[in-house]
Image 1 (cartoon, one colour):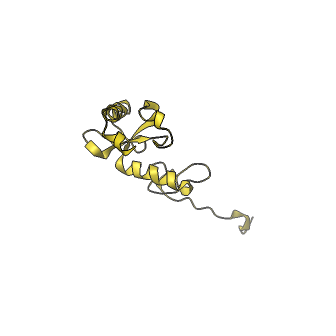
Image 2 (cartoon, one colour):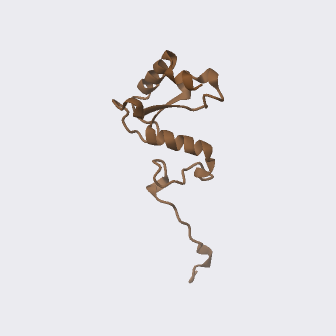
Image 3 (cartoon, one colour):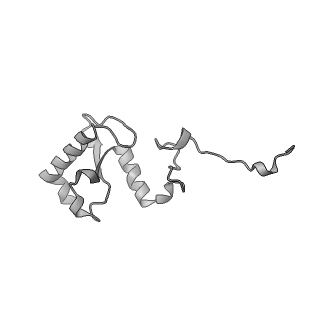
Length: 112
């Protein structure tokens, strides 16, 4: 499927996806305008798994290079999110508070 990315079909689908997403990264909202190849378009359902969706607009997501890399890393290692679906990586734009949440055992508090 690597040859697909050199086709006119993909170039049109890519331009349409970037336009439909307002030339903004879907994860971090970074502008993708005038970024050339740094403006990535991600297949939500992998091209190898769902080739029929290769140009389907609802299957395409505009991402910056960093978020596209994270997206593929998270697909390879789904444990990068907590049980509630929040990212464990503090540098991730969706991480709550931008810091790892620590919990204390309050059952052993003195004076209670």
